[in-house]
Length: 583
Image (cartoon, rainbow, N blue to C red; front, side):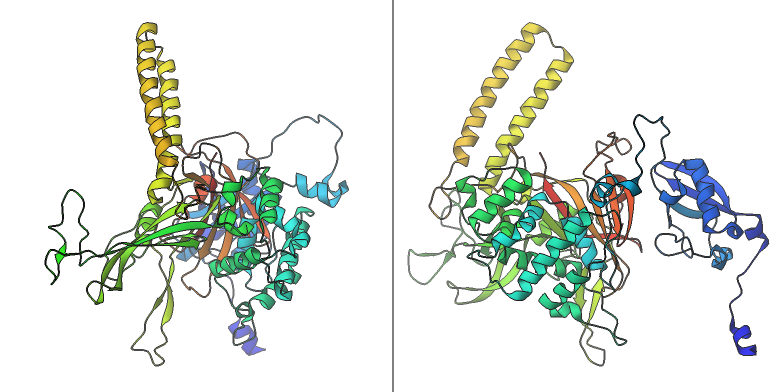
């Protein structure tokens, strides 16, 4: 009895906690100052904040901004008296999320949600349904929520049974089980407003990927890498969605687009049609400069035979990728000291670098410059932030090394322009759309300025004639024979008309924690239904409605909250960004 009572922790109750703890609550763009009374508990705190924000207590989500409070979303059974407020810098910082209730008179007969069928209740629910964590499966839940809003991918799953006879399908039992379980997860999510327990899919995943069945010393499931899960999922889906018929049906059923014959060249499954990025990779020897026509042959390396010039031709290869990488460590080679602070700079670095390669002219290995450019655009673009890397530990006992995480902040915006990452022929096509958009914007401005009619007419006539000639030249340059000599040329499958190379952010997977093999993943997904459009501060960035999926807990948020996920601290930071072609 003495031992139990002697070691029991007794909450610290100070005069400050009895009189109230000074607290700052941030709700959207508004900030409120209140005093927390720990004795009143979580319900009292939510009721206090609900009174000043008009957000119902049951829809109010509270997250800590000050260290030493609670972890994640505040649970109703959490004991506020267990917090040592004397060690926390005042005022306490709390982030409140939730939409304020709007009072209006009944316009029709009231129908309660509990009286609706499950399918209808799910459609009218304020938030989408979440996925229950089955033991360190947050990596899986976050990816599933991000892929959930891609209509062409969902269309493929709905018709999966008819795809099993695809010529490119391996038809293995584990693959079929994985795909059918994935289809059932999405189908069940759409039919319920409650959190779903994906038991069958977790088992199918461990069957298809044995490494995801690894357990810790005590038998608990180990945390896995969300990007590795995404790559494995897309790999199986590509094997099970082969054939031009599947590709056509996927785009017709998902987005209503009719796929042209030229768009199917080089595409043999729906996943590569959606996520596939054809990369043009050029290697140039650094030790033998290739002379340009203006420089002549004097800059090339002379060899023994008189009147002969040594020229190492460029090596051009084509490969298929399903993501771009944002290199945030400073370069693709270890000697680079470039500081990366924006996603554009990180992608540029990952697309270039130095490698050691054999030169047939020199007869030995030498330094080459590697340059990659996009030669076919995807309709869904995935960008991975290089947050995790392997660090050697030569001084350790086992010399096995350790997996580390880069915490530095790398900013991104709601759109991503890939024009500068594209090959010359893709840029020529994109420039046509960009020039048309620029001309339309200039015409709109000219009309708004209400120019003199005679001056405006002369200006418009000369300007339009010049632009028409430029567009004709650009169009002629863009109609080129493809590298395979077939004459079929498409910049990408399922892209909108007059596509300018601009993608919009619609989903993000974040990782929180300093441990690369631990931590917690969450999914952030843009809402399909947007309310009144607002801007973020004085910028042109739309502050759209989003949802954050913390496994089974789903909460509303805004674009401004998503753009803060750039890293630089212990808060959630972006690991995978999902973009779709902007119309």
